[in-house]
Image 1: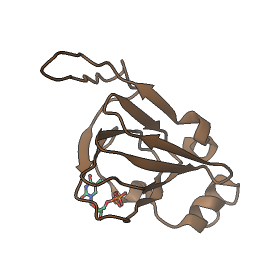
Image 2: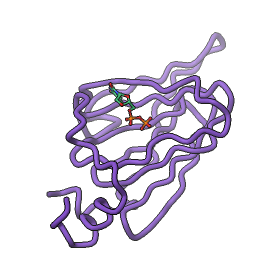
Image 3: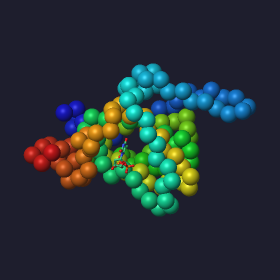
Amino acid sequence: MDEIKTSVYNCTVIELPQVESRSGNITPVTCNKEIPFNIKRVYYLYDVPGGETRGGHAHRNLHQLIVAASGSFDVVLDDGKIRRTVSLNRPNYGLYVVPGIWRELINFSSGSVLLVLASMSYDECDYIRDYSIFSKLKNGDTHNS
Ligand code: TYD
């Protein structure tokens, strides 16, 4: 399974195009142009109460682009060995998250909107929600995965 080998350094911040005008800006995202996958699903997270955290899981096969469409938040990435925190606060930057990365979403600003472009439909079987299983999968012990 490819997700076993992925590292937090495979997750990159992508600068997206910004079509600027006096009356506002537009950011277009085109499959296999700005992002290296086809978009099957779009969802957005909003109304996150102050101090709340989200995420706390990894995906087996899902590729995602996470964008702070409004406001700001931090994404803590973890590949079982290395942790890396990426702050998102501009709608024309997206964090590309490859499969096999544990993520926590923290420090949401008031009124923030987290937009996700995802490569697959929602599938609970694609989630790894237990960190000890994730850690074993990433570090070579696949008996409990
Ligand atoms: P989850 O991905 O665990 O949210 P987060 O990472 O933000 O904490 O999803 C939370 C719930 O929402 C989960 O029980 C299933 C539901 N859900 C859908 O029905 N469809 C979706 O596309 C997503 C992302 C979640």
